[in-house]
Image (tube, rainbow, N blue to C red; front, side, top):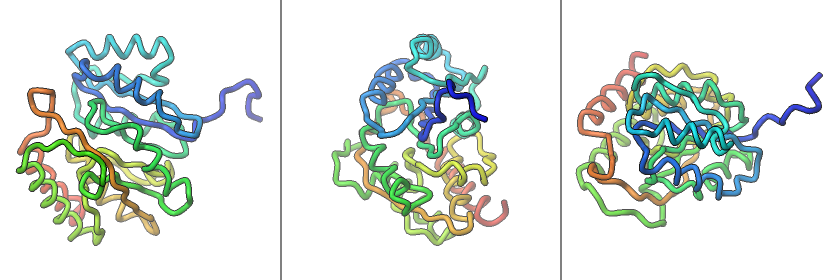
Length: 241
């Protein structure tokens, strides 16, 4: 029999992987708290071995109850490893991913969750290329690479996504429970897509979002090498894994 005094299990878990984001992490958590998610929500931050003071800020936020779960990696392992830790800790019926920078606006997470809450979807992607909201104009070749990787991924998964590499993904907990993530770095994005597509009967939706991309001077970390890895992961998880 459940403990009558115990806090109810959250309906929504938002997982935030963070690595050296001292300049933005406090503001990001404030923005999350400013959103009415319409559910009992937990914020899970996974500090992936930060060395710039991010962990000090997170310790303070956790002590004040602003971060509900703080998971720590003693050394940097990569975004995929951080997400796997966060998913394992999540207790919500729904899970959403939020990067620790300010490229994605938490106010758009409710729109991401709407098809799941309406019973239409099991997985929802937030597309930077299908949205009518504002988009910062940056990096033509990043745009080309993202569209190319999405096209190749779609060829193997038979999906018609417009933005496979997006951070914003939300899904039912039971769907991610069927997936064993292996990629430790940015290859997790094509791996997730390949494995979502392989779950029998899964319903995948896409909603348009805005995007405020960062420059490398502002802390952007992904490089052309990650694009090559993503292409390899598309082939690996659709053909052999």
